[in-house]
Image 1 (cartoon, rainbow, N blue to C red):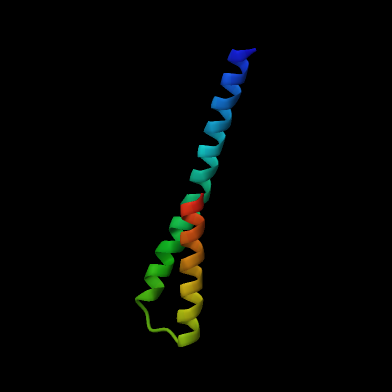
Image 2 (image 1 turned 90 degrees about the vertical axis):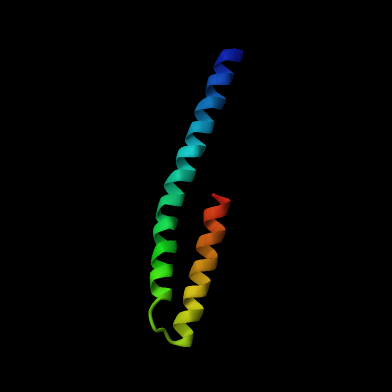
Length: 64
């Protein structure tokens, strides 16, 4: 019984780690694209949208 519970906890930990990785990979792409867009000429509205996207991607990345 104890061994079964230990294996279930180990499996759950693996699943959580895999999920975190699956979430962080696309967020890394978003952050990279934001950095590229920051190197272009943008309107003030586009800069604001980009700042929002960057902030949200960072918050999600570090909470995943």
